[in-house]
Length: 170
Image (cartoon, rainbow, N blue to C red; front, side, top):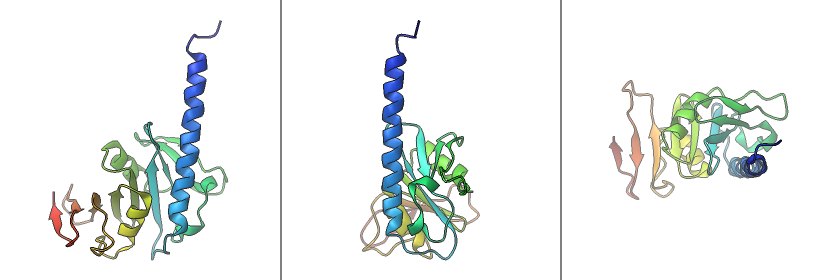
């Protein structure tokens, strides 16, 4: 006899698959408008209502990344779903992205050349990572975006909060 919650479990699994598919599409839509970067980068987005995130492969030109090239990870860092195309390797920065998502630091994160940023949207994270110093100009800064720079100090984070481009260390 089936477990009484089996239909609900199947329904929950179906909803999760739809949310994952939407997140993959939204992530790739943000990447489609991204500028080419000087070195490989990856961007990730949290799947609403779950402990999962979708991440792109490491690529200098994220505009060509499609949903079949993305991976799904748990916020604990374990891979849940490898890229469907079976040719693309998951991002080498997936554990750093897992840490950002596990900490609840932002819905999206991007990494490039040893830096990682977190922001409310994939597009904001991509804009921040594209800037040479990790700080977008005031007219492009998104409130709530954070950039972690390799400064030698563990836990140093710079927070972009105002339109005058003030940098504060937390």
